[in-house]
Image (cartoon, helix red, strand yellow):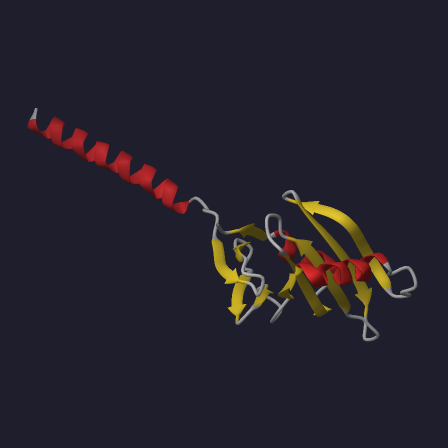
Length: 167
């Protein structure tokens, strides 16, 4: 009888440990984030899903996103409202550019409007520019990558980012 209780307790503990092990081994979303205070006075939280090896780095007022293969994939800066029109014009007036690989005006990502354009550099590398308005703020963010590892990898890094206003 005494051994039956001991075996029951041991089996119960093994069951609990195995359930805990399953939860510990399940992949959990990995998020890296920083809060930036912009020159407009807005506080912007920038989050990056780091599950695929991407890294988010805050360098003064720059947002740097790198992947595990390339030193820096995207470099972003905050753009105050008065300069946003200039950036938007840059994305709408691209018809005379001969080396455009792809572009998208008025795209949406998690309810946020953004524009992008990808150019082919003379050396065969890709240059990507992305502009995103941040709702409930007086600013947007401009990403530039002169030597992107390719449009797909750059988009993948960008799609892992999330921006929100901090109250």
